[in-house]
Length: 231
Image 1 (cartoon, rainbow, N blue to C red):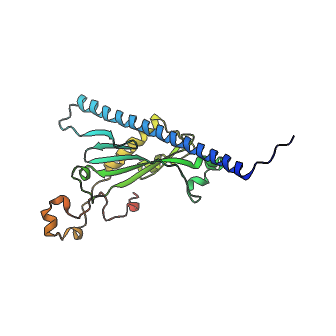
Image 2 (cartoon, one colour):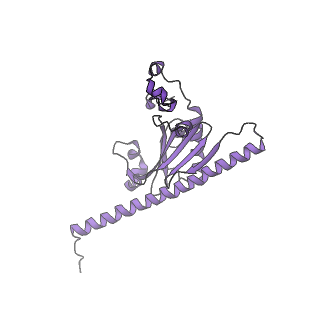
Image 3 (cartoon, helix red, strand yellow):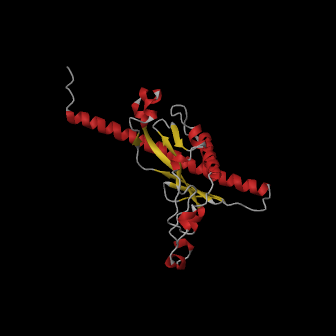
């Protein structure tokens, strides 16, 4: 006996289950990767402590990490902070994105659905002194798909090393490389003096309310478009 043709409603339910299941897999992969990222970062801080003790460093540089909620990791070293933020939603790349033209995605379009972990760099003093006008910079974002394959859109060290989506699985070894690259980029991304004309005037009220209240943003590349930092 021939099977009856699926109704439009049944086809809708099939599509609903397929899409929801795919997104759940991507989300779990991203969350597992984020937790592994936290373990790797913790090991970095422990290894630094061992290094500092073995070399009897006269000036101990602060290097520590902590969770700021379920989806945010803070890494503080010297005068910098790196924040790793996991987005709780799943994304697909636009049709114009380069990744959509790769053989890896063309073979199976579902591979383009990805979770996202963003990496931001802030000055540590911005948080210590609650300078709410200060700015941070996204230095990279990690995309992880249903196969736990990943690639990174990022600046310099990050962007150059991890841009082949189909070849890399986000395992402990790769995460160590990513964390090292993020710290290296941050160490090379120096604070520039703000333009003189932006600092010429200050009101009496601003001065009375201490330096923290001055409406002067502090950032490593303030006055320049982040996209211009290509070298």
